[in-house]
Amino acid sequence: MNGVELLASDPDHKSAPTRELRGRAFARRNGVEYAETYEDLFAWEPDAVIITSENSRHRELVERAAHAGVHILCEKPLATEVADGEAMIAACERAGSILMLAYPVRFSPAFRELKQLVDSGSLGIPLSVSGTNNGKVPLDSREWFVDPVAAGGGALVDHVVHCADLIDVLTEGEPAVKVYAVANQVLHADKRVAVETGGLVSIEYGSGLVASIDCSWSEPDTAPTWGGLTFQVTGSHGSAEIAPFASHVGGSGPDGQIYLGIGADLDELLLRTFLDAVRHSGKPTPGIRPSMIPQPDGLSGLRTLKIMDAARVSAQHGEPATV
Image (cartoon, rainbow, N blue to C red):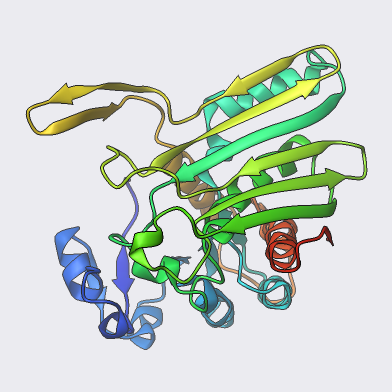
């Protein structure tokens, strides 16, 4: 992207599993300048940071960035515990920093069209939502995803929040009331992972809307991509379904499956939204709300975190959990 300078830092890379490429080696492979410590990174005086650490470390890094007076884009989920998410939001409000969550699917042109259908009343009163967010077990790319402490859980933590965020957009932030979830470790049992690899979550909202989310790591290791997402809304007058990652050329060749993506780059759309807000807001001023709050913000991230947390509780106890 034009007008952007990028510096990366990963002081904890030595503690990562050896199969993961991190730290200076990862930066070098991607042509990015590297700082050995966070002190060096903040001495560079960045305008903003993107936090892509293990889920359990989001709070400490968000609070550190807010204290340094920069704007923040944080990977999903907001945190592994609701109290941590609330503390992160409070820290950014005190610092006057933007806190945006990395939910790229809401930037999909297909989802924007779906939202227009809902907002216009073409589908009538929304009655139910059915979402799937299925992927590979992320052992080869980031092994910490299957660490119950670092990640906060498995497939429930990794995938529920994406569909929950889309529902959050459609309902304009209506909080969920009750969650019922089931999960198991049947998928990829041979890999002996310590977290759930499959799950199904039902969510009830005060308006009467009912949603179901299949969040399983059900894609085979040989699949050409990480996975995909589908999202269907059924209303009193009709229904509509989207598959934002389905735009591609597929086939097979001598080296295996062919997958050439031709759809919109959702990560780029998310990043441009964040950068526009950073440029418009200028340097954070403690106690002053930024002039532009890009969505999804910390509060939307907190609502989806509460749904994820309730799903973990429900799956553990075998009964519905309140949000």
